[in-house]
Image (cartoon, rainbow, N blue to C red; front, side, top):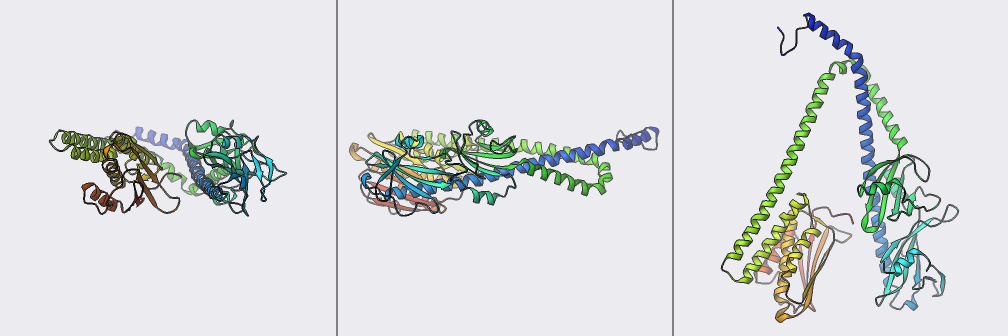
Length: 510
């Protein structure tokens, strides 16, 4: 009798089946080889994509550091020029080592060290953009193969709110050579900075001259996603085909790329194919026998993976539903508090605090991020709710740096902000006194701390949040300790409260 639908080999049907399997071996062997080659090619391409995407992150971080540090040094250089534009004179040496720094007056004339005026750049588009009010610009690459190739970062100079000139730092076009060496993407690799209008800022290896690349595939890819990887069939500089990783640094108006030659990818591919064939040859016959079993395992693995994806999606929906319900329950608590017979001020304080807690859960389920929370968007939501409770004549404004926090940090930070602003509204502006409350969230370039600063132009306060006796002041002190931070209060022309705290979640780029 057959077992499980299969006939015994000793019977005619079983013999025919065995013969059929033997004849299938010459077919299965090349099919298995093709499968191995396809998987190898996919892995090599995936690894190459991951490598250029990782490389472009490094390039972006270096470019951002270069631009931001240069702008900061230009700001310091600007401050050292003095208040009188007529007396601007360049300092000894450049603002940055191994660079050239130049100063131009409001008419675009270069200012010599002796104060004399030189050649004018007033016809340049970048100068006119600064003159029209743009705070800073990055120039396209200047020069050619027979001269020095360079680019500049220029900053607008203002005195008494008026345009007073430009201070610019010019850098050699090979400024990316260090990061190119560090990435080690192989022969034919490149790293590039491009302005969002298409003009090349710099590239390494350095091309003969600057060109406009707005017609290149990277701008087509940017319409699909702000970062990613693609294959460029022909470079406008050397006609080589490359795998290109790109990223848009939107706040800088810069596109950065890192690329590796497709020849390197092909060499890696054929190298892996040869190595695989060499290792697989002795056991190829055994693999043919086990081929069906391996395919079954692969199918099971794929099925399990899909089931895990479904389970993960269900868990994500459940997490969203949990946070959504917590937010709804908190709103119901707020409604119950409003219905209670209690002083209006007490009910308003409680509902504001609960609203700050509710905003965390609302932000989590709307952003679909459970491990980290965008502090900029979350605090803006809290402040938008507080704005409605501002006394007449009191303006509330804020400037929040991009920052990511864990939910455990975001909740006390939102409550601290709620308490400080609420205290300012209640105690800083009595009898219809007008004024303003300003909030800033800053992330210093160095260190692992963030700073929340709240200033108001009210009548001031007699106690610091850590020393006060009210519930609000005790909450501020306790929540600051929960953040692992410190509170500093300054009373001069109003109140300035500074909460400095460590950041546990990674910040955004910038």
